Image 1 (cartoon, rainbow, N blue to C red):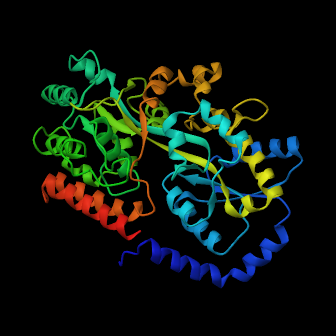
Image 2: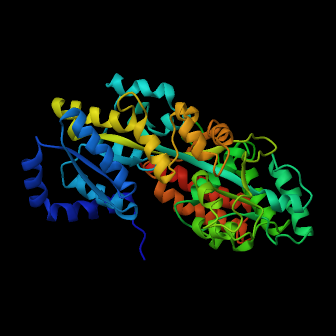
Image 3: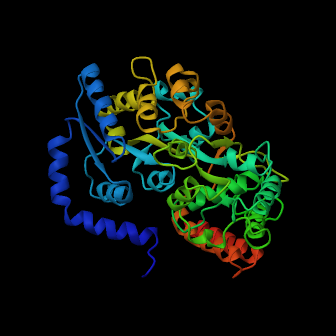
Length: 438
């Protein structure tokens, strides 16, 4: 199937939208001065509706809430933007921010001090994930990071008293576990071509002290001293030399990796931090009660860093142009992304009900959250690792196109179809070409 780039996608979306422009235009004229138009993906729907009801009761304002499945959300929103459908506030992924900001669909919130004041309580990587070209585009409601988990019981059986703190120790402990015949491939690593792949790769690169690009946006992934070379070398050796990671890792997606770890096949796993609830749920995991979170192992020239991601409430440029509409939309954003009646109510609600992570640091001291999290993990470790999380450095308008090439290049090196140098050169050349074209 032909691969379409971003320009092709926008053109096709525009064509589809224009075909329905009469409908969108009519809806826009009818609702322009009515409710706050809010659109999100279909997650935490009951919680969102509940918080909207409280907002309407508190402010007297009305909200028109719509949603779409995550898998179709980006395409749906692009079509709405191009068709000028009524949109005031929406959920935004950090991965789409540059594209949507460059297209003129999102408005920065720098002119609203009532929103910016919450930055003081938010983890730094989360705030940075909402910024593009020096401007901030929203308030977070959900954030999380790639975590390192281990099966404490399996380690004990192998005579290991503490989890690894470095990637070298991961190798040493994994070899010991293999020798004890407790696991054929002690480390579960998912490297299938899917949206999760950049999260896994970024965690490995950051923990080795590397970068994909520098602060100026130029590719450094190919640099042996400050790029991704150490991280990719470690994976290649783990698969082909030490044989502590399955060669089938390039076909294992995040969900299948989760299932493999819950079945007791592995001693270590990299997974989204929120997965700990599943890992320690007896109804879903055969290793429940034995899974602990450790710090992300550090490379020889790195630290215990990991990658974080962020989802936030964004303000559309259409709403920002209307002073009265903008004022209402800002109240709505604060109610959800900031405090409601003096409390970080929505973030807490989402954590308690569905386990979503949060970026507002005061919630780590909330007694109810501490008590709830203690049922399946250590909140101090949760907080400690989050403080070491970094935003993805490759998020750009051309991220999607580059990500396809980068993922394939890393996979080729892992399975021996490419050298490490060639794989990273291909990734870097693609990045520089796309960056120059943009």
